[in-house]
Length: 111
Image (cartoon, rainbow, N blue to C red):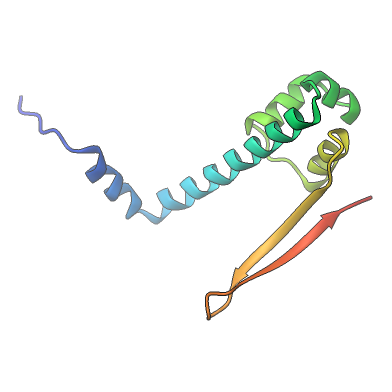
């Protein structure tokens, strides 16, 4: 049986030519970024997962799923997490115009 070694970079270039692959990669990247932000926020607040859970009136397992990227949280859940960690939730939409200039539309989530 003849096997041909294909360089990983060649395979990756083939994958990148698939729009579905690129879309999924972007989605996973966004989920990972959110997980990182949540973990950094809790770490900076000096709280344990159990303490955040208690303040959110949920279980530590729910907070673990949220921080681990195993959940698709609503804005309400993210707002509760922010309140529990003593932070403020801000969401923004960014759009580039024809000149390449970025326009940002921030939203602050409050009660």
